[in-house]
Length: 477
Ligand code: 4AD
Ligand code: MG
Image (cartoon, rainbow, N blue to C red):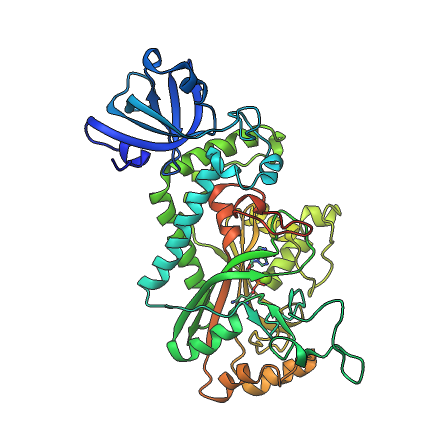
């Protein structure tokens, strides 16, 4: 007999005479009531064991974490909190779990402890919910772009280009590190490396994406990206997933409209599909908030925050306006910021971004027209000669969630910029070809997928929204 998913059993419209469920025991109470979960839903199904007719030996093996198969009748439950339960006629232990050693005890564990058990934490309610929400969110990403006729593009993971020019890359090589081949000048001879050149893991698929947008019109990527920045924060991963749409003929305003519409769509979609999981995560967040001092607690619940983003336009503010606001802000005057904002041109830190979003505007903010020298080489220079058509979207509790821009489509201006920054034109000959042959205005952005999952799940550490986080000094599992 084929087993039925617990989600389907709980959603049944009638009692059923013979059903089979398979899953993992969450708890076993009074030698009689199993709370069984199979990952299809946050909800467990209660399985009532006929303990008088079940051998003592078998009852002992029904422990938290064990895999079991139950066959019986789906009946209306007399207990509170569930419509149906299974009256078990036959119980089979599929896989024992040593109750003394199983780390996921039915009690509250710290997030730190769970991170050390990333392979088992998904057996908890919170991580099951987070992973289902993550899955639905990624489907929503595809759904949005596919509906709009974007082409899904897989850009290379191994690349010779440093798209962001930040130099925070993991090198890819098959050279023997203890015996590197040298050129006559004593440099490492990359001609002998696997690709015959120096290569890295990609930090962004944008440059390759642009070349395809210049033929397919609108593309998006959704894949892993890698950054060797040594920032041990709750917002940074060394391996994270990025979504990068790129659209021919879009200017910066079109780009902002697209980003806003896209984010609202995926949140709405996920709220519709994951209501049980989000309700659970909302409760989890409320519990967590209670441990904080009053002043640091959020004024909104998780679902209120998500609805707020759906119902309100993102506030669009130029970098120059933002600097004025920050310069006059109380934390700046009282020297409460770690980095004091004195003048135009300063790079914004996450403390400033969060002040703007959480204290000043109290809504998502799109900052645009940043100083050219704090942004990447490919952004379009404004008429003022000192700002570029960049945009960052800032979210409450997260800071930067999106970074994007209108691209510099003028060959001469782009080459000039690359020369000033010392970017090798020969390395990027293929990128420059887009500006040589049929160049046009175009724009795109990158959304950090884990930062979006953080926002939607109400989690606060990015290590808790990806199955197996990669961070400095940590690549376990
Ligand atoms: O702002 P970034 O660096 O922009 C780019 O890479 C552009 N090429 C995007 C484009 O225009 N096509 O990164 C984009 C987003 C950030 O806003 C942030 O959400 C996320 O990627 N991000 C990270 N997420 C997790 N860990 C990290 N280390 C991240 N670095 C960036
Ligand atoms: Mg950025």
